Image: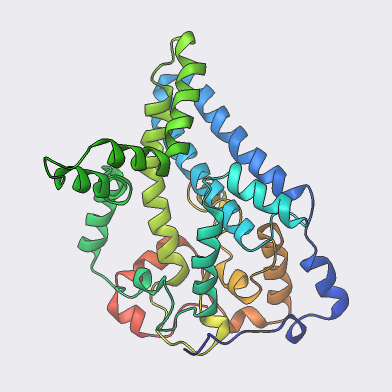
Length: 316
């Protein structure tokens, strides 16, 4: 197995420049986690006061659910806190969790980025696709079909294939254990909100975003990061794409600097909140001209649904 080519920080930065960039803050990572949860609570409060804003709240909350997953991703790189124990606690208990298993899987993606052994290659390999195919995927995401397939189809299949002599309890017990955070969060949220008449808060303001907006923005993020990048790409500056994001896109699609994905692959141990500064410094040094940098998410989607564009040199 040939690992993907890597870049060294010293190639682009002096030791004096790199030292503050590689430093991890003891408060910025926890502050981002607190920000994600506060935004979720604020969006829920908005929906309580003005039910007409529920669709907007669903989008905001779904984006922060992605944000929490992004911060868990930072923890997988040991970049959420300088103390590894604190880093792992934050990444495993205040985000979606499953940090240890995810770390093993995800670091394999970095080691073999866009190479045959990349476990995430399946996400980018189908592109380019047709616009009709993309819209079908969008519909599946927004109607909950993607969520059901990823989270519940396996359980339903196990129950449907159960023989009459096979006990039901072990299957249900395993399902609850695997999804214990899901059910615990449901019970706590209902217990807190139902006495005030907001019994619908959990299904509408947590489950609905998780089942609709979250799968969609996760898909769009994956497309932006690696779609239309050649398999076995030898250039480490072109293993991933950075996508410029405006304020609305950062709020509803690309939270916590996830759009700086090329910089993340170049320097994967750097905290997410440092990536914008790295991008600016690389741009000042003329390095971004060699990187994959898209002007926006719409442009990436156009490339991902156009064989002519994907076959041509990628946008810089």
